[in-house]
Image 1 (cartoon, rainbow, N blue to C red):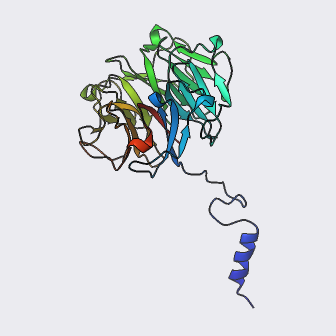
Image 2 (image 1 turned 90 degrees about the vertical axis):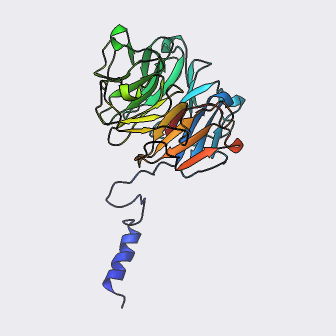
Image 3 (image 1 turned 120 degrees about the vertical axis):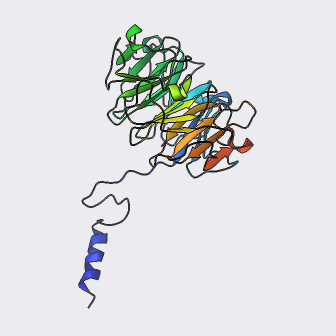
Amino acid sequence: MRPRSYILVLLALALGLGGCGSSGGGGPITPPAPTLAYVANRDAGSIVGFMLTANGNVAPAVNISGGNTQLSTPVAVAVDSSGRIYAANDAATSVLIFASGANGNVAPIGVLGGSNTQLTGVEGIAIDHDGFIYVSNFNSNSIVVFNPGAAGNPSPTRLIAGLLTTLNEPVAMAFDSNNNLYVGQHATNSPLLEFAAGSSGNVPPIAALNGQSFFQSVADGLALDSANRIIVGNYCSPGGVAIYAAGASGNASPVQVIKGPNTATGCVGGLAVDSSNNIYVANITGTGSDSLSMFPSSATGNVAPSREITGSNTTLNTPFSVAIH
């Protein structure tokens, strides 16, 4: 006779009660861990994706490019919870939406654009925790918000604009765990702004971070980690990455600064964090050696990245914006 414990194991397997990622049984299904870092490859006219473990002169695992894609100077990328890929199409003043798993010379499944959208000089895109689509309008100093799944020529659900907002060439955006919106700005010496969740209209930010010890003039990279630490990447002047404590505002000093020749963070085009709070930085060199670098969350000073994706096989050419999914 087989032991009773053996029979119970067989019964559990038959009922689907065991195993990693099992769809049966009585527990919640754990979502898959992020695997790709997507980059808006501006001057190559593509969206590329690299495995999070990639290193060196490697080809991208995903390369959305070609005439069917309608990509035209993509400057920002975001991915929603279902895996749909959103590209801010600067030259065409539109947002392209690609299916989850899209790769190659594929047409978008949707396009946001037209006079009703109020898109003007799209420079950043972000998806909040409820799936709403945020687009930063560089030319009109505004942020337009669309319903989840929006496409075509709809009017925005919300519009953040006006003198009280103090928006000045907004670019990168990110959200904290409370869905508050953080906005990095391209205009020199403009602070990083925080708006309350659901903000609409001519409303003032609830906080502004000047960060005088590491002034984020031209903040083209922005992310918040799982502890709501604020991670800012600077485009060329002064360059580097600064990490601020959660809730930092005013002239707060960063708690960490990643900067120096070993870091290769002289011109940060964008950044993102993964589920382990590792920091992925898109670096623009102007010399044909653009890169995507990974630093652990504890990195500080003039340190080399743990991994660096760079070289001709990567196709990286003026990489702006990074999204992890």
